[in-house]
Length: 295
Image: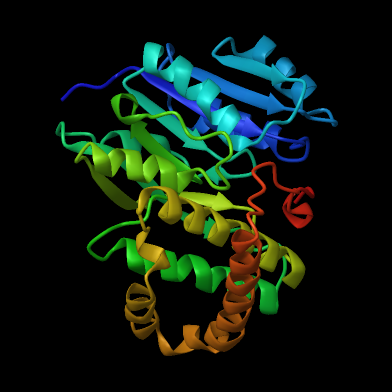
């Protein structure tokens, strides 16, 4: 099946330390078609992100900034990208503004759309090694478990770098706490497959302190609770059974962070449960500050 119309979507809020590296990566290392548009939603930025994107647009006309003066949450930004992608593309590539795909990773994702039953393909996230110690070990464990679970029966879509068939895109509720589970559930409802392409790597920024790890995990848990409460859909990584299977598949050297990582995960889950029970589902999240600094 020939799918040659691509759009790349990036949501950016105060990413002046990261956005230039991503845009340079996309235009010079991913071999994207000349007709491919790179849509960058600069949402309520108070730094130089919009100016940096505008400077890249002068260098490469495929880059198209979409400026939002007020930050309304990632779901709102994604819906703008979805609206354009449905008209202009067969496949939408989504990549985080603070991520860096390895050379050729975008093509590796697109190459998996060989049959009409493929709804999405996602890459393997690899945490950038910004510092050593407990926090780096915990985030590596989190993504290692995500990798193992994604090789099981039901992969959990990762939005750090993924490709989605535009026919499967559905508007995300603007009060959604997280976006990937809604995209995943929409694809499943259309009876399309979600494939994991671990050979396509994307290097990601992760929290570098315990407070930020808990904040990020709490946000994810609230999003999962919200989705399950409204639609009944449950992602595979929220399954205790799947988590046990993944932990049992770890190498002995990887288990050192299971106890501290599990403690932080339980703490984040309990905080999320309390907030959710009170109807506190913030959809414009406070940024994770330790992921915004330059490398």
